[in-house]
Length: 384
Image 1 (tube, rainbow, N blue to C red):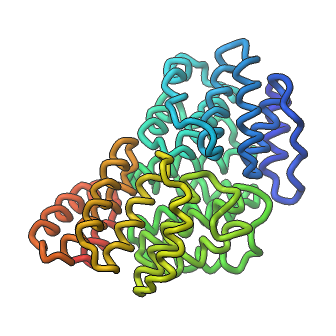
Image 2: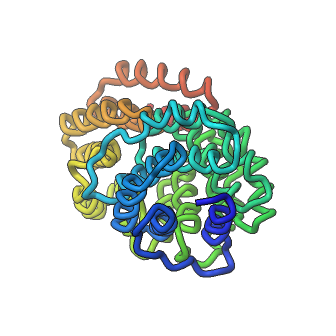
């Protein structure tokens, strides 16, 4: 696939005022790239899997192999039949040695973005650091908005909100240039919410005044990211509202596994906050359908911990929080790691272990504050 064909495909995917292109059945390298990216945008991950297999088999050079890695990452991010494994590390030396040009910027972006989509946050950070941020090679093309949003999310989900905030103004400018402000508003809400800054109200209002998203992951992702920002501010009810608007059904059928799991966990949390045990249990039952999937493990364990806590089963609440901590720490999921420790502290406080909870949260707040992740301080104050 030459640069002209790549530019054209990315333009078709990112333009908001035209329908998404029809996906061909993948039969060779170029149709596989096209079908795989369209499948990712519409949420058809079985198509992404077929496309990744074709592209992997037909790649003839390092750039092609790197593109195959990106599609293979998206495949396991959204297709529950695909094994969760590290498909990215073999690409690190390829990206490190790659020239700085637009085609390789796309390869770096897709590998990094698919690692985020698979909740492999530490690996996503490694991939991002192999070269310049991809948007620098695509200034003036609407894909720069998705690329900037990807770099911001890598930093944010790794708990480095200061790094993420440093790219927000550039992303906002790009969003206005290309009329993709829903995504940039959602990304900004994620960052400022987890930085515990109070300037999110206009962002939430703008998103809630839009029509319900139905085109692709860019539209849906804006609502999901804003929901995660609302959760960072402790506004679980607002987060639940945004989740309910983010797809054609509340269990997010077109989303990746991590977004489905985090979304349903927020619905559990919103119900648990008002001690609506029946609703919390109902959403947990839906989330239990993802049991056994490594990507879903931390949010599932946290949701189980929340429901056990409101039922008064402190032993289960603590043990599930410990499992969430272990699972989140393995892949560098720092925001989730902090949330899991807050869940453990809540169970400890409920059991009268206030000193132990205070020590746990004091250490977590010091570390998080050093990177601008001030939502942890707010959450800790609520627990204690």
